Length: 131
Image (cartoon, rainbow, N blue to C red):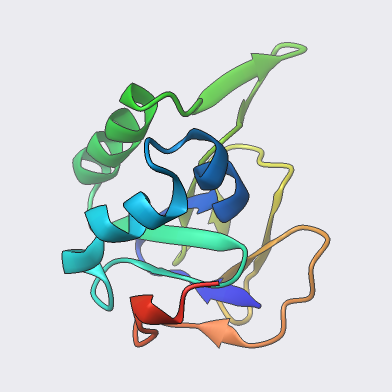
């Protein structure tokens, strides 16, 4: 599966959420319940939140970093996304290198590297259909 991207996207692997989010995946769903089918959706591998502007996406990143997620890290002099990734759906992918996230510019969708793209999940997915 893959997730549709729009404007500026904040993406986290669900497995990382299970490991690092206070309360795990179930709490993440509860905390974002009022945003489901609006700016938040997910497939079986990836969770997506989004924003229309840089300040809003920066706020989302900072909130997740405060929970213990690592954002931008440096390795061998290059910056890349670690636990989360910010993508620009309209412009074709991650803002920095992100080795776990693939992007299909034709469908403007993102997927977990090593999985099949398949069906693309848009905002109409119910949070009750959790993986």
